[in-house]
Length: 169
Image (tube, rainbow, N blue to C red):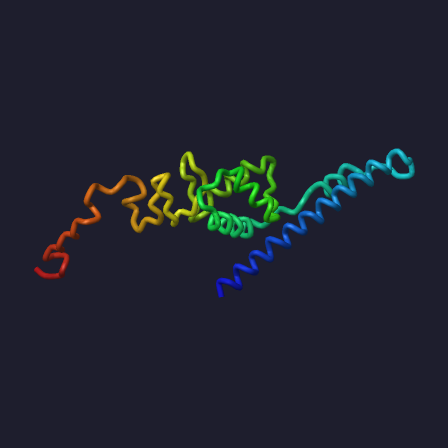
């Protein structure tokens, strides 16, 4: 079943790439047509509203953005910087949007569940270990999130419950 899903995701990425190329070709043609119309004198350039509509592209939904980020990081052998994530998203046909696309990517990545920024390395799946950054992978309790465990703490046996905790008096 996973192979089918993976194939569908690859096909979706290929279609997005193709659509991005088509959109680029259309935008280039419209830009050329506007520039050619003025010297001929037969037509006036489009109004600012129309020009703005032509230049504006539909932003990819956040769920698709997150799915693509997870797929990109799942295939990565090391954490990726935000520029690398952005470039991979662009190749996949994801339209990030925002005034500054790199800031938008960083902002969205920081809010994603299961994605962390390993300082000095880049973005990485939280549940995947990355030894060069000292990242152990998923933690099962809050104890490992803020402070490293005490030496030998993992090997120590759990304390025996008191009589009160067992329900005996």
